Amino acid sequence: MIGQVVKAVRCQLGASITETILNDWDQAQDRISKKRYTDVFDNWGAEANVSIAITDKTGLSPSALITPPSSPTSLFTLGTGVSATSESYRNVKFNTFYNVRELFNRPCPIDNQRLGSPLVATDLKITPLLEGRLLAMRTGEASSLDEPGRTNVLSTTIRFTVDTSLNLNPSWKLIQANVNSSGNLFTTSRNRIHELIITFGPLDRNRGGRSLIPIAEQTHIFAIAQRDMQVIRQSP
Image (cartoon, rainbow, N blue to C red; front, side):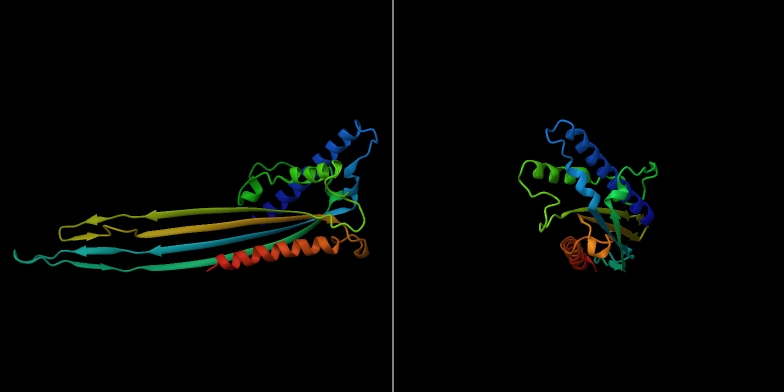
């Protein structure tokens, strides 16, 4: 599943970046200046952090109601039951770094077996994020992406919560006893939280372009810290 998520994120990043750049190049032909705003992406990078948290709960709760023979003037019944529960929690986190230039126009084979995580099977809506920022820049509502001294950082968080459960409630009625006539004999449930944090920003030239500029790195780390605190509060 981790391999599928890494591949899906890379493919969607590459497809969205390619679509955004090609759209901008087409629109540049109709501009008087012929300016291509996405050329700045040649010096940009992207970081993606994935967290997969899984909580499994299992419960066993058999019960019985016993009605032994009694005199006509009295009625005696005996109820009995036992319950047991178990709970497990797992969390997997990993971080990947990409150079936007290397993602552009990079072919990515289509995998029809989209299994394991909603991050694999869902459109992550990265293209609207990129094109929305470019539109704000072209209309003068935001600074240029390559303007010195600006904190030009794009960050988005995609979160999926998937809950599944199963209840088993067989019952038996005997002459002098009812077994598991109420309640659930066996229950099991799984809660999955899959979250992806993507941060775009200029490459840090002081580090040879192997990381984002400090403000982008800090934005990415802060988003991860917020996510982890929320996961801790929800964990057992």
